[in-house]
Image (tube, rainbow, N blue to C red):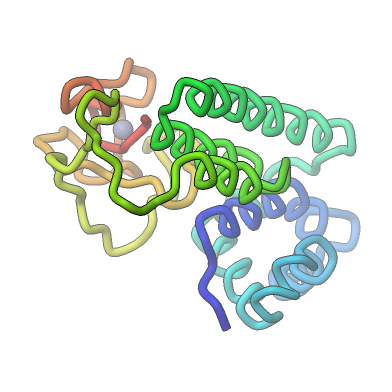
Length: 223
Ligand SMILES: [Zn+2]
């Protein structure tokens, strides 16, 4: 059994967002267990093949438990699901374009970071490992690259909060959906956690020489 990557978890989140209300909140009023079964077996075959049915069932159940509003949201239509997919794909395509541009300008680290970002926007949009491989072909990982003169800036100075659970949502009132794996930067924020934040409508705050954008109310990383 292998562990799920961030992209795998985002795939699960997208499937839950797109389909969970139609099973749980639909004409048949499926139980949560049956909803999990339909989501995992009907919409996550590739992940189930790779990680095993048990792992995916548990991951789907955990996602729904952490995001109960996903179950009770209004049902989705094919048009809405198509629109969401088109938006995810457009963002991934934009990140890949930027990655190609950085690759051409001999900025491999930026290119790889942008490929990661594209994959997290829409994990099924393209074969992202193919793009990573072409960066590694042009810039073999060994010997270590001399970073002097590149635009790369590390964010090692920012301490991360060690949460007891993943961020469930952002904002006490808005309860905005948060991509799985988002982290919280330690700081003197008014709210102790993103779930209790009341600053979600405000602009982000740039930290660490403008390499990290966080919510000024809770420190949620929004970069
Ligand atoms: Zn916040």
